[in-house]
Length: 289
Image (tube, rainbow, N blue to C red; front, side):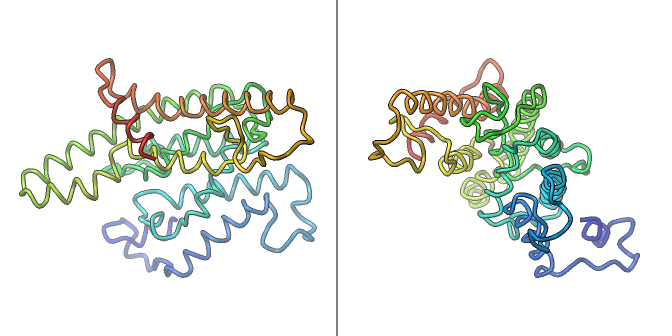
């Protein structure tokens, strides 16, 4: 990350002899970090390694890999769109539901910084985050209890979860500002530029367009409940499950889903203040999806 930043033209250290890594090398870094997360914190050297055998060790490696991936996806680096595949995006999303509290707190803290362009994500001018990362807020709600199955066994993080939702609201406000400025600039050029904005850039910076990404994430979660009262991947023909127990599981899953959607939609609506006029648009979008 530092090498890429320092090698960019205009950087104070652009003449220090550092050369940005090749695209292939960068892809290997992304892949290695994603695989560490996929393998639950087991390093590339394999499960037989004498290191990282304990749960604490593996949690530390998951934390380092997840934070590293988030930092590499800083918008100013322009790496995320090319190198963070859909598979990696889903794997990284799992860390927002990590059973280890320190891991979950760290990735939420890093995402919060990304959303409000602070800390390592602070640049001048600020770069808005990809909407794929805004969608992660839907995975940051706490369950009724720490480690609840309805929330994929995620550790509860208390105020960190509420703080992230506030950061998402602030991010939505910033994205709207970028969207309005870009639209005004395009309109000032000509009609063709305005159409190009509507067909391309608007889909990348208008915060409401984070909804399809979030619904995609949630649809592929095993613990996600559906309107029909079943879980994703659940076999409707299973007869060996106690009906009362199954009903309780489904009720908990639907309650958690509502909370996750609240974490997603509240910032989008509240960022417009008391005069919010995007509710019908959001409902129509969900209907079409």
